[in-house]
Length: 122
Image (tube, rainbow, N blue to C red; front, side):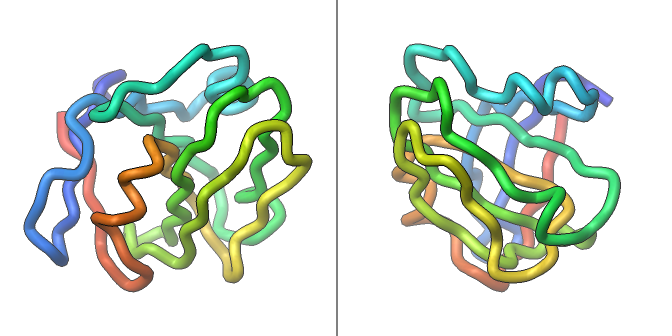
């Protein structure tokens, strides 16, 4: 799998982000966006999980100094929840079970909705 992907909203037939880092290893997922100074408007990170549940899909915002859009996906790539995560907040948990998490700029939330199906391509 390529380290960089393009995020597509299959439901709305639109490109969401042009540069998404594919993050499947434990260390990559652990670091996430921690200690980053900013995130480009066309940039994101896909945190790939191993199973679908609420606990494993929880994120924190410690050491992240800017707000981000969070999009939780089930194993089919369907959006199960979204939120705007604010800096230094302890925890965000999706409303339902999720496997993967797409994190991006806040404007991403205007182009994706619960129920949409997303895909990622090299």
